[in-house]
Image 1 (cartoon, rainbow, N blue to C red):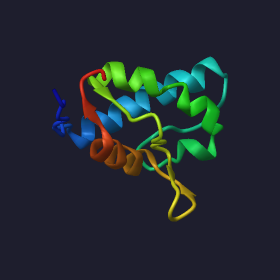
Image 2: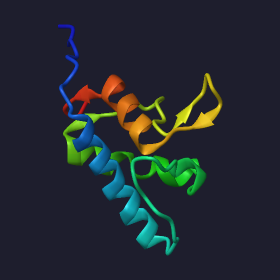
Image 3: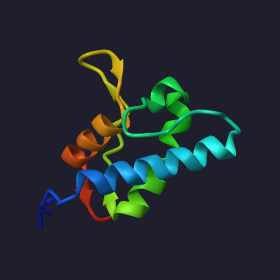
Length: 100
């Protein structure tokens, strides 16, 4: 049987708040001073390797799966880091319902 993945309904504010929360936790753990909000670009503060490590926390908190090949904090086409707001928009588009 083929499983069909339904797009889940995630609220923009909820996703932004959760991204901010996990990035704030990361900031505290790494003892980095930075103002974390919807307009900041986490990729300009942390390396991509560090940000990839928070993916499981986001998945657990939101009850979703982020496809392995997807990195929500960067736009490959435009070659730029995304803000928390833009990363939330990207996450909502690519997220799969539940743990896969």
